[in-house]
Image (cartoon, rainbow, N blue to C red; front, side):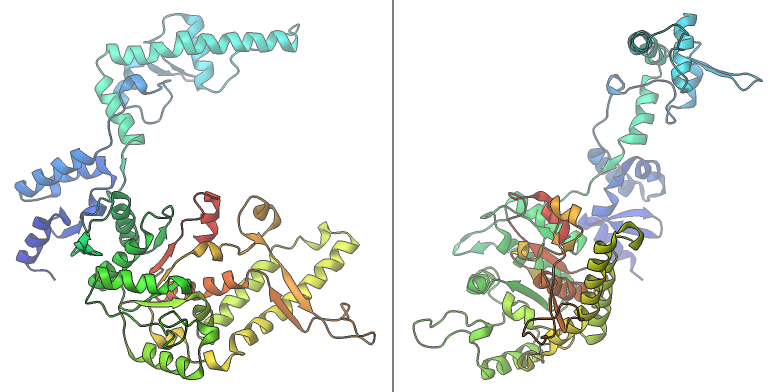
Amino acid sequence: MLEAGEIKDLLDSGDYARVSDTKIQNARLYYAGNIYKKIDDIDKVKPAAQRDKQLARLDKVKPKLIPIDQVSITGKEKWLPASAITSIGKQSYADGTVIVGMNAIDDNHLLHLFNAYVNGDDLVKKNKDDTPEEHAERIKVAQQTLLTEAIPLIKQKIMDDGLAGEVTDAYNRAYNFFAEPVFNGASLKNLPTKFRGKPFKLMIHQQEGAERAIYNKKGVLAFSPGLGKTPTAIIVANQQLQRGVMKKPLFIVPANTIQQWEATTRDLYPDAKVFEFPKYQSGPNKGKVKDWPAMSAADKGKMLNDLTNNRYDYTFVSTNLAQKFSIPDAKLNKYLDELVESITGMEAPDEDLNKSQLKAKQKRIAKLRMLKRTMMSAYSEDPTAGGFDMGRLGFDAVFADEVQYYKNIGMQSEDAKGGIGANVALTAKYPIGPDGKQDTEQDPISVTLGSSRSYDFRFKTRYISENNNGNNIFLLTGTPTPNKPLELMTLL
């Protein structure tokens, strides 16, 4: 329970707004959404000074009014106020007939035409001796008459009766009420002021991207190359660490960029605790990152001990090392079961297939039965990586750079042709037959899945996300936007 003084401090900061006597709300949420409803409810806000302050800000973020001359009015809109219906006229008869617009349209022919339109009836009945061309021409003339002579009279009557303001308000309340959250960097606290020895300030797109990611607690920073994804991601992590939203984020980045990430982090936040990725200590590569294939058992053991027993603000690891990380067996089993089920679900029903297609389907199903066992084995086959269990290492957020490399999850063929993911590809190994060749008539002994790197990444980010209420996954890429914006779909 907050004390009165604490509530006042929150309201005075501008980060919160009062909703009622007993409720306050994050300002970014309050000053977004249906602004008209919040203006209608403003009387619940007390004292008057706070109410006036919030009303002024609501008026400022309210969408620009769409005037009546830009609004199409036909008389059958559900949002029209009762006064407008009364103005144009509406009469119901005992036989169920409803006539609309008699106060606005004096000409009986135009009134009949208008009501045929309102009721969804044919504008023109087809005469017995009409040719299709003649009937089409009569419809065209009726439509033109409706648009230029009848419908304009409805709006004119409303305006003549002094209802323009009321109708304009009703339209905007129905269709122009929504304000998006404002992301302008105002909520970013304790930002670095120096970078590489020079004054530092985030550019506008970085402020917006950082705030959106922080507000949603996840997201994709898809800036074009060179526009500052790296410092933005580092700052997002720092902001979330300050808020306690995350405690031990993991950054998965290409090996050849680890030193850049480490240096940028130390430059922006000299006091941050940064994991030191193994590097060559001598020789021509001295100081360069030593990636997983080049690490000795001692390197791996030291790194495992370091990561397990320390809570770093920033841990940068290579994509190769990230693939060695494991997730708990129960989760992996669940994800693999769902993967097999989803791929199986892409198959056409048996009744839609001919004999040869059915046989091919049965072979694919046999591959799928082996797929899970093969993938489970692959995760446990490297004993030197067995200790890198994400559950024990304690990571609670993932920032991943160059995520376009993970976009090719398996999709149905028609989707893949449209640029979403890639066709599902299963490669099987079969027992060797008497002729020394693989016997493809038998069940496979192992099956590998195309795009396995993408699925591995998806499993690990899903594990982190599920442990953090669906949050704390941040993806970085500059490639999809100049290539195919649709590629972002598979990343999301």
